[in-house]
Image (cartoon, rainbow, N blue to C red; front, side):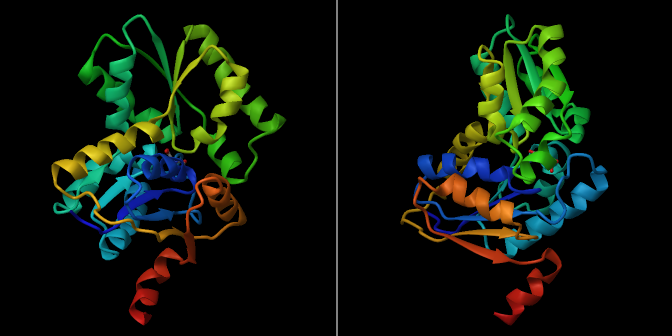
Length: 278
Ligand code: DGL
């Protein structure tokens, strides 16, 4: 048994889409979340930049004594997973792409035409294709980047015509030309536009890695006898810039869950200083 918190992080609010799934499956776990809202998006940045941002955040989470680090970001998982695993040999570091690849190969067959949408960095890394093909090299995979989705979502531009037009701009030809029947939301921000995608392409099967990752978290914690034994009520959500949208999104995501959340507006650079003060 281990009652320490699980640390989650993302470039912004996207990783929050994993949290309700975790709370349903493992309601006793306490969560510390870090959204790097001051520096989002990561998905068009250089790998070296993403690596240095990720190390800063993961160092911060480790200082909070988390028992596990969950990279709730496809872009970071695609580029920095092994770097972070090497950096913290004593803390399990879980990426989001491997569990998704396992799920895809379990529920899809070689008859399916599978599309992956993600950030530029995720798609250019080829991580999805590589991990899926390691499990089954006959799977038919098509990928395309959708770089405008994250900035729009971070701005809260979701349920409206601008988002619908942007989705159509990226996805109409991609789906039609490749005759896709399955779409993988390869960015943790995208579950927030899942209903738009479903409305625009009703026959498309949608796979959401933000749902799949929580089963891996459970399996790893169980294997290591690290599941929490007592109910932990205080989840903490940090943002490097506490934007109105981040706060609204937390309220929106957790409204029905009736969870207690505590906001802290810590600039990454100031984090250590403030902790020392405490
Ligand atoms: N939510 C992230 C992902 O899963 C990152 C998006 C971004 O910052 O560009 O890829």
